Figure 1 (cartoon, helix red, strand yellow):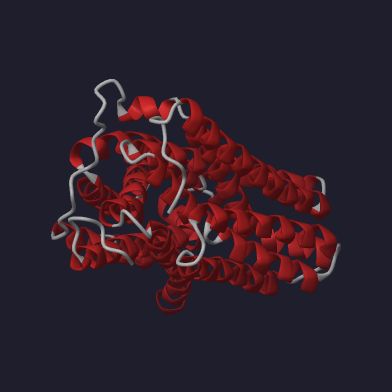
Figure 2 (cartoon, helix red, strand yellow):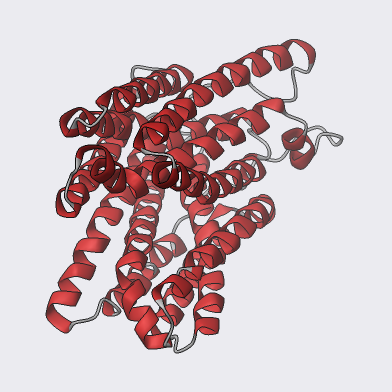
Length: 406
């Protein structure tokens, strides 16, 4: 990867290590929450459905944090925001492990969510400080490790249940793992945030007035809803459409997440040959192909499984590539822009899977497949509008945004 002016190769490698370990820790602890819900319910004398409020608390905290952390990063830098986020998330996860009431779970979930929003933002944006060029590959590479953590978390939880009868100990492991990148980040020395040269053009103003920002935010809103929705409802979809057993459905779901992780590896490699806008276009076309296959599966377990793999590989590079485009478009105000886009993504990740579940359960799996296809077509259309907005802004307001590039 090309060195950023003023940033040594050693600093770039350290930044990539910090980002990768941060996202691995995030993927690990987030993926353990589901398997630990029955134990949390037992510890708090609550029913399983009630304990599900933990995820709502995490979402509220994360969305609020991403909006605030974007502004804070412009003042104190991404490294400080990252470290604070990691410490808060670790405290929140450890507090979930010792909660003895539902109220404690909610408060602990809010703390973990506040930390999660900051660490996801900071973990991605230390890349922008270290890589002025080739950041698409760096973003994709570091985000591979979120998938690695997400695969390892449930496996570790299962091992804990088998050996101790409870998955709660895995939360303590998750809290400890979050401290590792915090320690690594202490020694990371990055250039200060880019400041705008025009006194009248504040980062927030440039961000809020940009159609490109809002369109990419809408893209990530749909994307995260699609990614989480497919992962959350694939097993149910297969069971209702093809009679797939729960065990086999779980394996197919693991295959989907593995495909998504593989897609990010491929995205990191492809970024050396494809500019980020073209890479994103190819991936979004792949989501439409995957949606068409899902619609055509019509009760075929094999075709549905192929569709899930195509969707996973195509989904993989979308998030990191879009964040790379947003941060390169808004050289000044990158933190604010990324925070806005990530917060909209969190909202989509909360709302659209809920909608997909209602469709799959109450209308049928075929209608759910059509909705996934519609999401893919919508993302492709929104991306086309975003590119058109950038072309228009270059002609009429050349300082409002740079052209999206790597």
